[in-house]
Length: 123
Image (tube, rainbow, N blue to C red; front, side):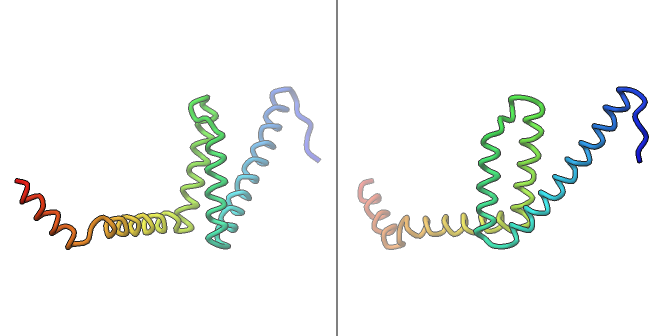
């Protein structure tokens, strides 16, 4: 059995320690669940990323110091999840492929030759 607090300050300190334990446990379990769920499939990773993005949209980082801290922590969690899941690498690969595909559609070499000839004739 724990000893009774001697005064109001000690009572508050004990309550704060209990809250700290609860919050730290909740965060650790949440991080583990996020990582575990993200490992299940690409669809799960995309769903988590979208959900975290929605949560970030709800937080106004400039409203207060607390909101800025929460926004930073959620952003960091999202970034870590992307790194762990390889999401950033896949995004970079998809972006690279999109750029290559767009460049391929811009003009074929023979189109460039005829355009160059047309430009020379105008000069």
